[in-house]
Image 1 (cartoon, rainbow, N blue to C red):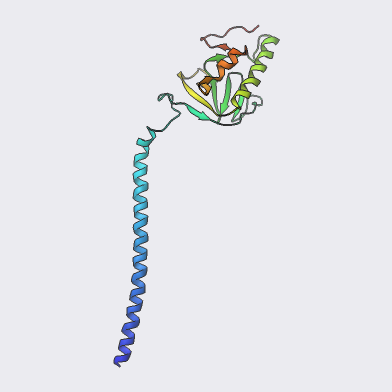
Image 2: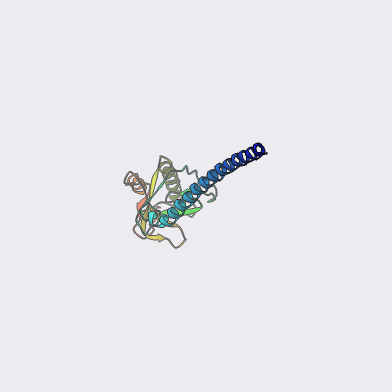
Length: 181
């Protein structure tokens, strides 16, 4: 009988060791998970503080957005990402008015010459926007009376709007519309 008791105890001890190893493995896994959750929680708490160090799109910070997207021409003024005219485009559904220029109208034009020049300005701005990444820099006002975001659009420190001005396709915005006829 003592041999049976010894075998029973040995089997019970082996089961105990196996169960202990499983418990230890489970305990270690739980410790790793707790550590991961603690780090994630700390990162979540620190995120608002880290965001003040990262570039943002906020006009109040003065930090430009860098955008790289293909912008086709808008069809009937509709589209999420598209060029509306020489000084307006839509980005993620939000209309952006290029704040430092005024281009000829392509819809409510006063004469055929304005329409033709407006079409050329629109095509040229589309080329410039699609030539590579560009920056959306904050302007003195965030939006205009139509709810469009007012931004300076630049690449490599040069205003894309001022390129249109230099090419005779736009005028520098001075706060008033001028006749193109």
